[in-house]
Image (tube, rainbow, N blue to C red; front, side, top):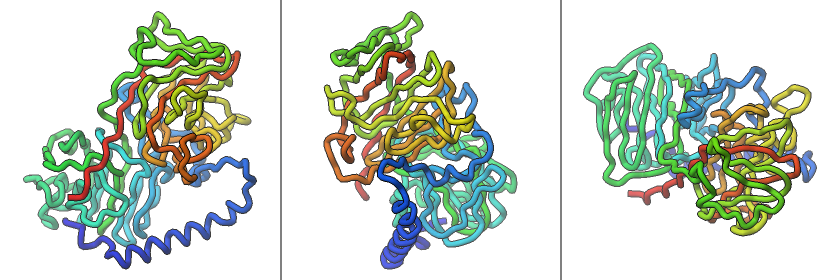
Length: 422
């Protein structure tokens, strides 16, 4: 079904946006006033977690997959509308309320998206790809992958609304699996392992959020996984080609016989020769002793000492509680937002994915999202003082004399700019 007619008219949208903004400010004001200046904000959605984090398999992690839904909370998602999005039995479920979207807080460019969905008979829902948070016309502003019974819509399940319809009946009351590849202007869709759609947009959108839609009926989503595409190595596993060694300081950066980048000893840095603004960075890291401290700095001022945003590396936590990280915790944005859970262990290789998208930053550790932060400070060339969106170098930190960490499989892709409106 074409859902453009059910999105907010401009007046209603403004009133809705103002109401949401006022409600959010009213809810947050007591917390803001109560906080000391040095307090580090912690994600609101972290509180309900009571069970162990569900992590991806080593095989999935090696392929580059991350989880967009942790199975417990709506961390990393934001609603647009008043549908009753909630988590039940490890799934995101919606069955009532206004028409609207639940969107990832993070935008992506090229990727493979895999998820399970289950829709009741008569349900009309969908998955929005490369979408703004509130599309005016989903047939133009995004790719709407429809979930609808064949008899109820000219674009049944597996179709792209107002772009291309599938010529088959895929109605089911059971769990089904979509695997969607969005690359360049091409969108391909597999449903339960069978390719059902192949569409190429002559004017590709190239970037946006992923949205789950509620239109009518009840629908559930689970196992929402994404694999970024187009990443390229920034470390060749042989030498330090592509890296600036002029600012190593007391640190010793070497390439091991196993093709790993090792850093030992005191304070210093190794920085890329290239600069990056909006990007997806994936890497593996191992700490060779307990409670070591390091970090990945990004959007750094080239040639200066770690004047950038820092994605922390510290696997320690307090009193056996992984939701109480020591010193920000691995994957936290240092001095900005603590990791909501420490999911990596010292002495074991772990995977980290960092997405920088304008003022928004998010980090996954072992495929589990641990931070989700938007820099709302005034612009400043130095990220230590304010918002920096212009490209900068990526730096690996040598922290102190105890430093002993290794890195491998460092890969990056730059996020494509969204195409202008058609």
